[in-house]
Image (cartoon, rainbow, N blue to C red; front, side):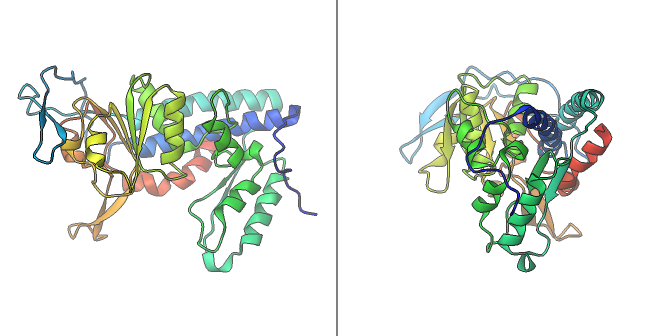
Length: 340
């Protein structure tokens, strides 16, 4: 009989709580990697420091299309640059915190976090049943405290079935339906939170950017980033709007935001003119665009037009870093080895 976690069983005994504690350390290590990848300056780009005060004399006028637009007054410095959110420094702080916590776990329980990352390398040769069997096997392994299934999965494999098969106590990615369900409910706390969305909130918090009472716009509604980050922002007392492919006039909605989380997968979709002066911009997008000057023939850009946005925003994450994105999936294991 296949070992598995009984559906709907959310009770945690003493050993399960210990496993969840170790798994939480794993999630935080991965979160540190996500923070670094999401906000580390790209090679050759020096961070720009200094706070930007939102100008008071911003006028509002009606455009020819009949909607209202924000016009930055001339008091906005022509050489203004948004403060770059230093993801590398934030990630290093988190990793240092985790190393201390893992050391404590090792001394107290004689255990260090064990993570299993499941990557489907040869899609056509792996069946859904085989993948689920592997998840059940990892659920039953006491040395594995966290399970991460790399998404997206091949089209012939049902993602929901695979994620539901992961024991909720080992769901370090926070994608189990019960974890997501608790995230969506007021007064409930999931065992684990999705790493990239939590990383976005960490970037804001550790940069001194408050979410309480702020207007936040999430661009994109994927299960991996858009939906969970919108729920996290709600829990953090932001007023949240989700912009998606069927949203009418997304530009006018985004222009009202104090905080923008861009996760639509559309290259440089959000222009500088869409951003309210002083807004905080977290760009999760990673898109390849043609660039003959590069050996690869392409370069990576975000969902936000960085060059334009950095002249308006108060805080912004830099354009994607290819090297960091490539090592992100392995970063978790590397940091686990360092911490242990």
